[in-house]
Length: 115
Image: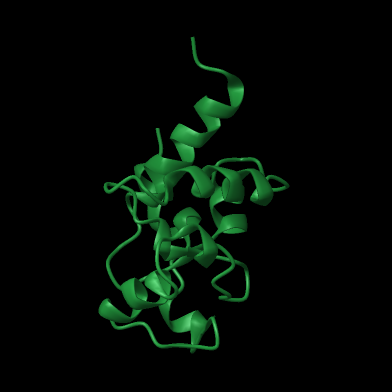
């Protein structure tokens, strides 16, 4: 039997799997999409557990202003930054440059697919 947190984490992972290559979203945008707008921190906890799951692009989830706040959960010094840069996203001093350009809003992108 899954706990409430495990169920929420699975919902987070379903959203994160849909973030397109070369795009990023925020913890808060995911929480808002899932109807739990005040649960950005819980999304962060889910992402802490996801960094080693190969099917979940955890590197594409950052804070609300584009800071790589979860980078210490990736192996290697700059792995999160390297993964983002491999997708064409420019990062300087742990900050995504032109964050708005790369931001993917699950509420706008996935609303038409909601059940």
